[in-house]
Amino acid sequence: MKLKHLFSFAALFIITAFSTLASAQGADAAAVKAQGLASNFGIIALASGLAIGLAALGGSIGQGRAAGAALEGIARNPGAAGQIRGPMILGLALIESLVIYALIIALLLVLKVG
Image 1 (tube, rainbow, N blue to C red):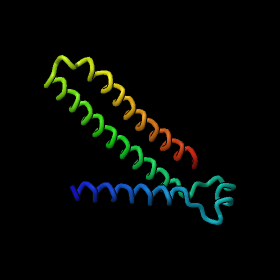
Image 2 (cartoon, one colour):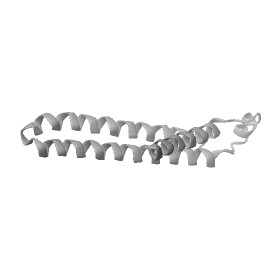
Image 3 (cartoon, rainbow, N blue to C red):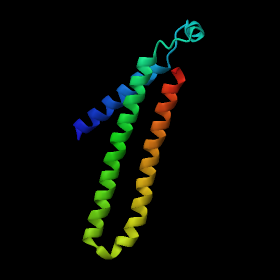
Image 4 (cartoon, rainbow, N blue to C red):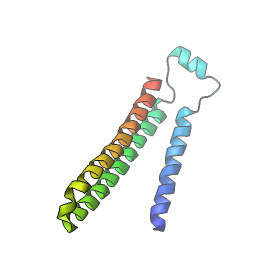
């Protein structure tokens, strides 16, 4: 259990560090934008890729656990399949919407410097 918390804090630290670097601008940000150069494009691209990768990983783990629990419930009580299926599909849709939201954020970050 402690290892799980350690990985969670490490992921949070990495995301925070890269997002801070991606949004940080120096005093010459206006000069860089005037020249049309994106000096921190690599950092923003790395942060976006890491964000969507972690979102997809978390979403797939959540969907797998939700579907597994629903199938286990149906296997234990086949008569409750209709009552389990609806909330399971709603939960899967909500999990997937969070992953799509992370994709939109990542695309906005990349398009910000492009």
